[in-house]
Length: 131
Image (tube, rainbow, N blue to C red; front, top):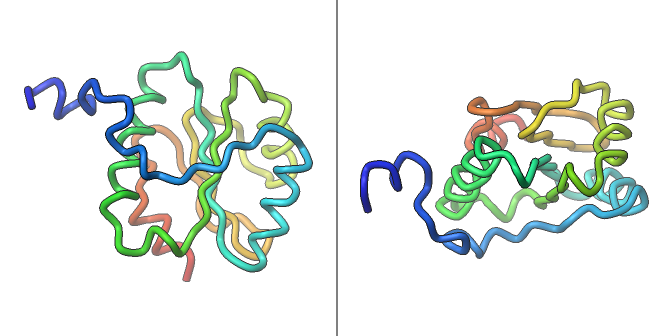
C-alpha cells in the first residue's frame, strides 16, 4: 500500500464492509434508534457522501470499528446527509448538538454521551464514553 493509500484509506470501497451500519432513512427509524439506546448504546454517524473529508473519516472509523474487540457493544447507525438532511436537523434539535459533517454521536439511555466531528471522531473514545 502506498503512502497516499495509507493516509487516505486506499481505493477499496469495501475494505471494511463488515461494519454493520443500519441506515437511517426516516424519522421513525431515528426515533426507534433513540428508544433502542435504553437497551444498548447507539452510535449515529452523519456522513456527506460527496465530501472527500467525510469519506476519509468514515473509512478511518470503520477501520477502528473492525479492529475493536468491543464493536458489538454498540449498534451503528448511518445517516446520508444529502438524502436525509431533515433527519439530521431533527437530531440536532432533539439531542441539542450542533449539526456537523462528518459527525458521530453516541446515545445511551436516550442521552448524548459522546459527540465529535471531523478528525476528532475516534471509536476508542466512543467506547470510553459508554461507561
